[in-house]
Image (tube, rainbow, N blue to C red; front, side, top):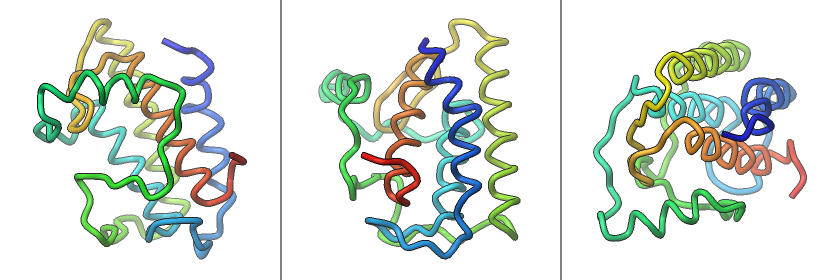
Amino acid sequence: MNPEKLDFIKNDFPAMIKKPKGDEIPEWGKMNPQQMIEHMTDSIRIADEKITHAVHTPLEDLPAYKGFMMSEKPFRPNTKNKLMDENPPAITNSTLQDAVQELEDEIDYFVNYFEQQPGRVTSNPIFGDLNYGEWVHLLHKHMVHHLKQFRLMQS
């Protein structure tokens, strides 16, 4: 597992997403900052099994998908998520600050979940079974993608 990427997830990402006021226009996509933060919270909930989905990727395609996921190649702008409708879901928190706090709480839960269960593997609906290090890599990649979406991180 990459400790720098874990540190980014635990510290850098939460600090960076506190900057938006909530009305920023994304470079691509339809989510506003709060929807993006809540989307990231749900992504972490998939990792720690609070949300479960069947794997949508055909079994024979999983090695190629996982190979991309584990690479340093970024997600492209407007990458389609098979789990999301054309329009983003309604927000669930009353404020942007509440959404950030919920995300920080979920990150803490995620870290504790895997640290208390060494060797634990959970299912990602796109990339298949992932261990803690693979989840850290994927979540880091996903977070960087959305930071770029809102110009909170340079390409």
